[in-house]
Length: 437
Ligand code: XUL
Ligand code: CO
Image (cartoon, rainbow, N blue to C red; front, side, top):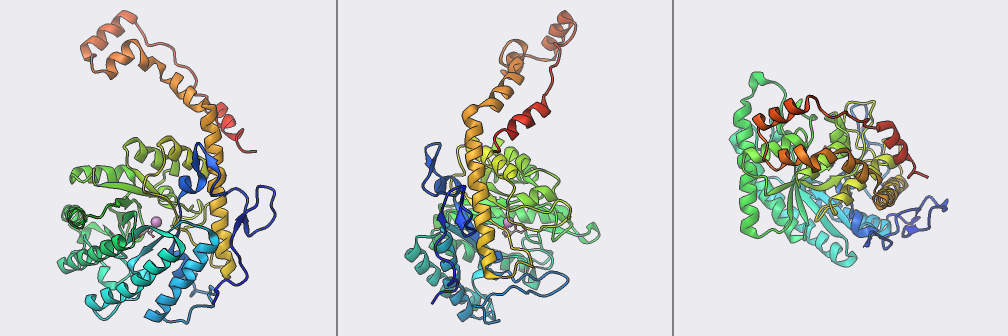
């Protein structure tokens, strides 16, 4: 039985193709800088938006047409959805997927029953992975939808909720390992606060640090080889999310001695909500060796919330791929489309258009980034811009030979600093635009 009977496997047809159900740039085996596009981009489909999204918003219920759904959250429906998901992903030709525990299986009457239901679905996912060769990029736990998490999970004022969250993450780690997951993600959910009038901020932060340490301990105990990733987000659902942005997360991890155990999963819409560009967040994390994976989407810059749209902006995808290539790839990470079709794109075929567009935008971004690197014009410009640090007083400062007294002596003798030269931003922006034909 087919759930997408009108769609066959999506093929690469080249830039001139007008076929909306074909790739114009994503050609999985094409080599770029000696590596296949497939291995550079490591695309993943996310289970939550793509197979659980209904299009509901604060003004109305879901209106997405999903003919395979029977309107229940039953175990049978969860099992059937695995077939839907794998047919979709196989036709799209995507190598990975990602999920939260609660996307793939409904909850039972208590934790024990919930875990048993989860195991049933995991067994079916494992079979589907084996049959199709599609792999798990990362798993995670949903510690925010159930009303028990109203005050947060590890940062809840209710110690029992911390314990529940620990049990849930323990299980989520086990199933991620069982399915060969290459990473495990911690997104803060409701870890944050709305008002200081009811919040012990320091105690909550200490609890978050303790929680992550316990997760690291358990990871080592079971020998889970994947990478642990934290996904920063500044606001939503709380006013003050504890994992605000990359700078904040790195400082937090260092404070609690966890910086060697985690990398970051950086999402475009979260970067822009923090009033950063995605390029800034990626460059910042990469500079500290902390860029692990990417949630590929975009926000609506006119709206102040997380719209999770599919990425189509080539300027954005080429900037992203430039930073990824410059750091030698994403390692175990990948590009996960944490993105949803708009409410008014309610037909199943829209799921294909959305992912094809996102994959093509990143494939084109990859080619543009490789061309930029081949010419090396920006590297050369930056190298020259900082050349005063490669000699004389600059190298004395960098190597630690200079102190305030020697610097004063140097400057008293010289009288004034060398003349500055222009930063040439407009010229450089024009050069960047040359690569978009
Ligand atoms: C929420 C978000 C999540 C994480 C996984 O804004 O991005 O879907 O990616 O929990
Ligand atoms: Co995300």
